[in-house]
Image 1: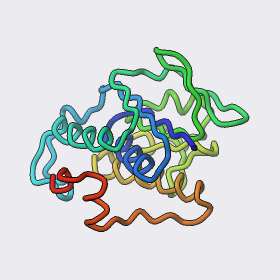
Image 2: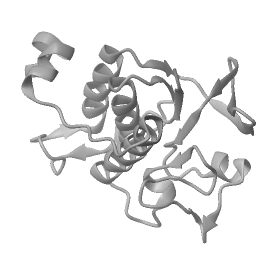
Image 3: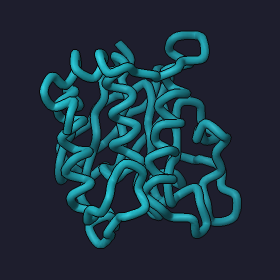
Image 4: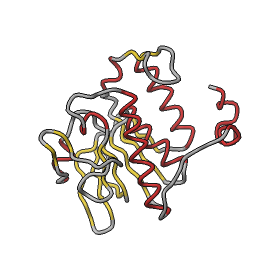
Length: 193
């Protein structure tokens, strides 16, 4: 089974994790909980009337936890290196390997720079699927945008990265489209929440 390691637990990182884990890829999220979302209040997020950023994160965390994502709250990634087989991720708790890496660290671009990702000025250069110049490494949210920082955009970036990973794994374009019965099968009574 391929593994996806997501660095960052804001809307982009949790969105990527939701899609990859839900579709059968073992996913780990390193969530330092330093996201700017704790300062936000959202009333422009589709499907959400009005919620503070911490409340939105709690909902998103519950979703990925329910799906079985290995979410490591308070974990800090210190370094990422490419290997012949994927990537080595060094954290404050040790070292792990991954097939794919999704960088969702907000405006902090240090890991992308240290890994050798191409930049366009001050932002990480990505294609439409959020893939960087390094195969298997994706960058999302504020790190790929000069000033357009917004929760919905970030979540969309995470979803784009996840769908590209899933398409690559399956060898064809992957469409993540669920019907009500799918949600009930996965979430049970939680499907209504």
